[in-house]
Amino acid sequence: MEKRYSYIINYNKWGKPMNQFTTGKFISRKSKEKNLTQKQVAEKIGVSNKTILKWETKVSQS
Image 1: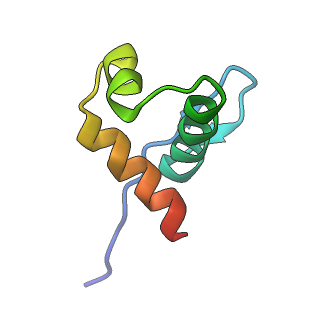
Image 2 (image 1 turned 45 degrees about the horizontal axis):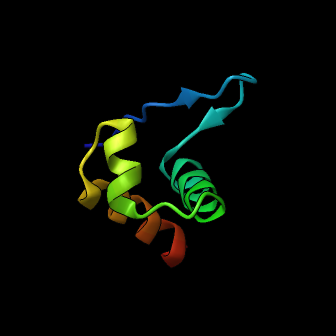
């Protein structure tokens, strides 16, 4: 049986696709620019700080 993968693609305001890698990279860059902790970023966008850690870790592993 053939495996099928489902991907959810979000688009940024310019119509370009964003995935977990680009989202994590963007969040990492912006949080450093604004000197925000992972917890502060998480509170601002309504996710847990563990989610932010996961996204940023994926960026550093790639």
